[in-house]
Image (cartoon, rainbow, N blue to C red; front, side, top):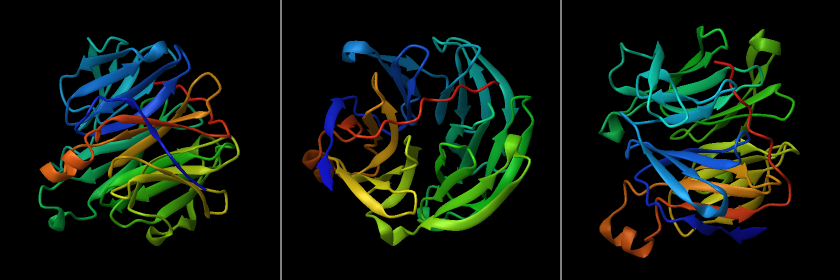
Length: 294
């Protein structure tokens, strides 16, 4: 089944990312990484842009209020208006070529996030990045390494399976997770690069365990069923969808961020809404956004 997403916000982000529906206020949030901004869409479609003191690679909501935010080399806590920032952890200070990228709240109140080698010459990017878990006690644990570009992080509804994709490699991997990360082990891969157009980017899982994946440079979002087969595709009027998140009162709207970087002038003329946020109705609701305990 193939459908088409509609433009929800013509924000023209340089690199829109990490969208989520905030259950505390029923707002949609996302970042423009290269625009050093956080965005909010409130009820009625009204949007607000918050200027950040650096590239905000992800934002996630906290139980105690405000957000946890990943800057390129550190994790910080921010208030709701993004006026104060408190650093809680440095990340890979010995690797100046890497920066933080994708992240999600885990079922136990921590966050899992990954880094990537953003060497300007993409042909020279190497698997020097890693994936980490920052626990509610603010302890940092490296889960695995040998990564080029971390993406696709999401958990199954029961919290026992974690998904991950290294975008240039294209393989969507799976890990078995024990309570409070008491065990963490890789299991059989979920899907390969040839199973859908483009490369795997940001993801979300719905209430039935389907894995929705933005396919950057493939111009679409695909839904993998729980056994890893594509059974739905949502096309976009843009080449670079980057992340997905379920929102709306019933969590049956899929929001999709996108990018404008790495486009030629002709490509931007052909897809003028690149960098916008798109939306599509879905039949299965998403899982409510978890709040981190940091």
